[in-house]
Length: 456
Image (cartoon, rainbow, N blue to C red; front, side, top):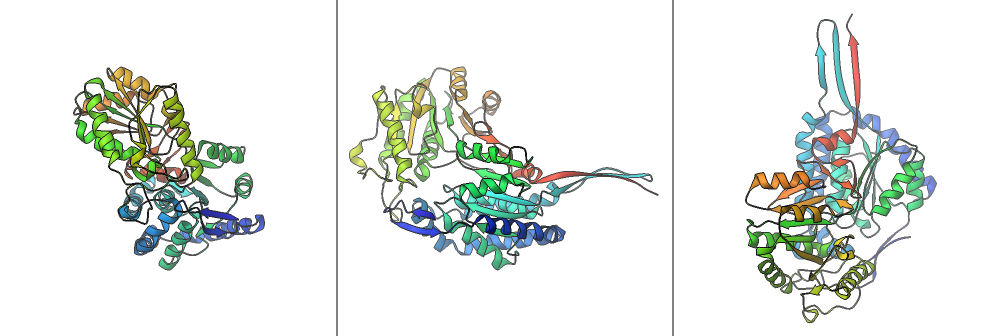
């Protein structure tokens, strides 16, 4: 049984029975059978159907927001994910005509030569719980628009999300076999991948999960997109607007209880700004309200599972035992030792501590002073991960020069914790492989097919 334990109170919020192996194979077969007819629709027809489904999700938002609070703990005051969900789908719809257009090499009296982009066939999307709508739509929308059929497997923590999306798309007129929400256990998922069931698999989740997907796909030549762990840094240069930097970086570290793929997990601050930065950061975090996410006054909800909170508690405690200084007063944030976890800011941290090297994915951030750009760059690169990096400086040329030396997928100047659908969402090192959104996202969800036509 796939069970969602609500972080609000530890109760069972939803249960679903996973498909048997035979049922899962039948779902893949239906998707494969439906794909050719779906791909034969005019591009504008597929776009209209997908965007109608997106709009239907928006109409459900009043119901979706409290459901998300129950499933994964995000406070209702933040209003859900439809803004980003719609932004990403809309951008991919708007660029589809150009991104999927054939590349014409020659059209002369003798020859017509061109390269088309054709769909892979059936795409499996394995989506995470932390931003369950936005992460899913990153692949679902462009995959469908490009002419693929899609199976969506959502995280067990957010089982209602896939059901909501599927119903919204069916009500818009997307055929049921073209977009299927499926409940699968890990073994069945691996077996399907190993059996070459899919033309492409997109997975967002842990490094361990990514390795399992790669192992299942070994020898199948299945295309993979993997967004895995992160330990995203922020660097505040000596010429930065420190007030803006601290406001954005601390929000990036703490929003969604720190459970953001591109959340800020470590901060490096020019020595001249360090004390003022920490003082303002402590004031911001000390004003948060930890509590029930259904309460409109709550600004910091529980983590999605108690075991996630316990892992962050251990990282924090180990750092303090090794000499780190904790700045947030526990008296401000009474907690029960379960999923509700107080936020914490640490200084006197080093890269010998797990809290500065291993993914935390919770409301804790370490802050270190640095003497110059070289030291900051060395520390930012001293990581197994590379998703985003946030550089704060008034000088764009300096930001570009620093960014060129950082091992990461995205470089931000004077912002953080944002996914721009016009840019490729990608990473390096243990953060994974491939890229979503942007024109490159369409390239990954299709394959090139060349035509060399000699005219009579």
